[in-house]
Image (cartoon, rainbow, N blue to C red; front, side, top):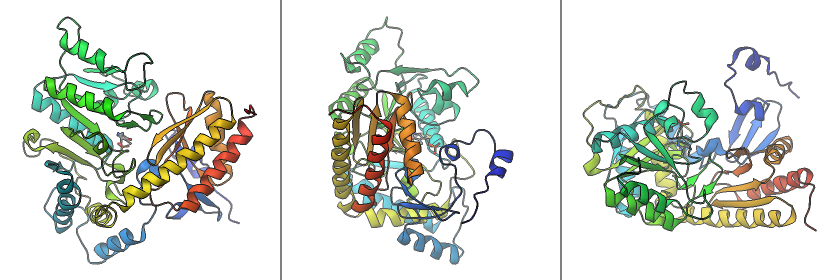
Amino acid sequence: MTTTEMTIFDDLESNVRGYCRSWPTVFDTASGSWLHDEGGRDYLDFFAGAGSLNYGHNNPELKAALIDYIARDGITHGLDMSTIAKRNLLETFQRVILEPRGLDYKVQFPGPTGANAVEAALKLARKVTGRTEIINFTNAFHGMTLGALSVTGNAGKRAGAGVPLVHTTAMPYDGYLSDTDGIEWMERVLDDSSSGQDTPAAVIVETVQGEGGVNVARMHWLRRLADLCAKRGILLIVDDVQMGCGRTGPFFSFEAAGITPDIVTLSKSISGYGLPMALVLMKREHDQWSPGEHNGTFRGNNPAFITAAAALEKYWADDALQKSTLIKGEHTHRRLSELTVGYQGLSTRGKGLVQGLVFDDASQAGKVTQLAFDRGLLVETSGAEDEVVKLLPALTITGAELDHGLDILAAAVDVICTERVN
Ligand SMILES: *Cc1c(COP(=O)(O)O)cnc(C)c1O
């Protein structure tokens, strides 16, 4: 066995490093739902690059398309120049995603991160409406740049900004308050000229808060939110960076609610292969950008366009993936529900293949993920107190792999949660 040499990371890599502390090994290769470290150990992946690997690691068909493209000297770096790779992606996105859903969005290529897509969305909403304020939600997560942080909930992350984060108001997300769903409060303050709440340019929302602890907004709550925005000329931004690309079942997480956001952000799994890429979709009338008004050096990651188009063709030309995601999600939910019945202080929530195991005693969640790692499973925690074990397997995971991971998780829970319900 090779010895795992970690010294260089401790010596040279900034203290900002995070995941490598939870999973202290040196990874080497990966395929499908498995990672392999340099010591030859295998890890089942219930993390999927925080939702960037919905189709698994090094998906063979996407890899073949990528290798072909590189081998024929296809453009790698293209700023926002027109390329065959980009044309093919736009045509595919229109044919496979937009047209079948009756969506008439224009497509912006921002810088290749979710945070940059969010920055672009906020800028555009302010430009289109001529207003300054943005409404966001409790426990939201939208990224680490200043604009994205200003609409993010977590106090520790916000403190990192080092400057006041202004021109935003956090409203209660669905389920945040027990006696009201928050929409009524929003309507009240928006319609009362003495409430102190200025009419915002936009509301930015996640349909399921991934980082915030797998908080699931109900469909009728989303519909009421969309309605509230439409009636007042407020733009609705759905941040689908993590929940898009099929994570909850359909390609867009808002489809099931029957709403059409004004602006949508996508990143994480949009390249299909874990390559950096992001998109901002906007209703045609909102495309009020001037040329180059939001630019960036790495908007044209053409290898990502190749894998993105291949992923759309392979997984979204029919509804097979959507159906299997919902079936696997229900199975996962059922198994987690069974687990919660056996122990004190456990509950579960989720949608599609984002499922959370919620611990009343937050410290137990981290212990469970540590033990799971020791036993060969990568799974992370989320939520305000890191009280939620967040399951985010690849959508392409097999039934046997899913059960294997759930078995490891159940065994870890059994060790950590000693207070059983008899
Ligand atoms: C991950 C994430 C972001 C930020 O994306 P980065 O690529 O890390 O900048 C924004 N919004 C949501 C909902 C996310 O999950």
